[in-house]
Length: 126
Image (cartoon, rainbow, N blue to C red; front, side, top):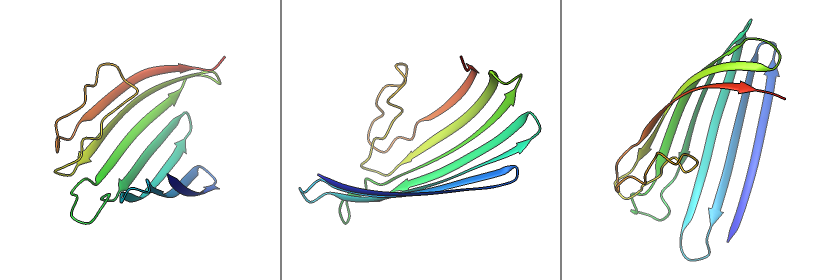
């Protein structure tokens, strides 16, 4: 397997942005080109965040590409505690089944189904 990745980030005052691009080749005829853009804007104790990403088909006509979009709002109570709410959605092509793998409550979807997630939480930094 071979992979390459490039990332770029910038900050201008209250605004932050990032861009990532990668390619993956499994040396068995499957290759993907992937990219993601993210942004965050601070307004006092509130931070607005958004991201969008895409993974191409693994082969011509495979219909297994995906896209994902998400949005989040953070509210800082103090330097250590942040409240947050966020929503994201994965859009699977006809033959893909991307899912949220870090959450026990999200089973793998059937091919072509598009899962979404609503997140509510408290982050505490020790």
